[in-house]
Length: 255
Image 1 (cartoon, rainbow, N blue to C red):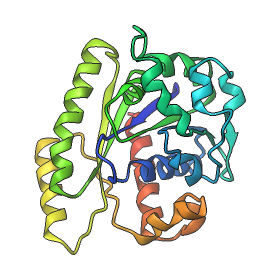
Image 2 (image 1 turned 90 degrees about the vertical axis):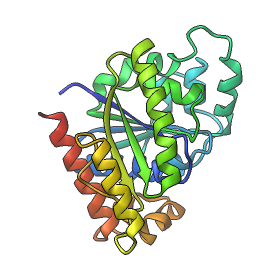
Image 3 (image 1 turned 30 degrees about the vertical axis):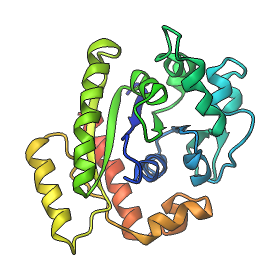
Image 4 (image 1 turned 120 degrees about the vertical axis):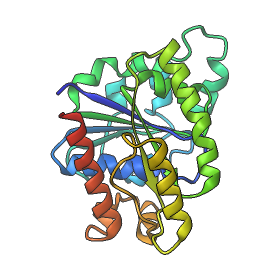
């Protein structure tokens, strides 16, 4: 199977996007897939979430501006098969530096072209916006995975994101597929979570992942220790959920 580039995006913050990017990447690595996680958020949370400091040099920013070769910026993590290209606050400047560049949406695609055959999966963790950075992620990706928190405000933002997805697919990246919608922070004790599940399933019956990520204190604690959930609470419900997600993703891509 050729390299699959998955863009994880949602313009709404706090939906479990980086948690999903980190732990899905880790789960795929545990399933013996060679994975590169690209931290494409200036906050650098995906970097610290796998135990990598938010470096001032050798980040994805230096790759985009042509200061560093992409291979110089790949860092090995404590998890076998998982590497990361870190990010930092300098990445914010890209939104300004590229604003008048006619090729501004294709810098990431160009940067990763030379390494796509080195990995089974490349996972891009985008920031909570629909600006130039996220559009770079969508143009570089083979598919879009949307984490969706189980609340109604999150549903409102989904329509805007999917509209952007359709425009990118129409004008910039015809091969971009909708990988799926992933429900996160699901609380089985509340009626609201179940109602959100029913509504999303009725609208996207073939694109909603069967796997649902539960609300979990351990999932929220793990990043503060610089560890994916599998190195922090490997037998907990959060780890089990992301491992199931990786299995489901692999099954989908081998059909």
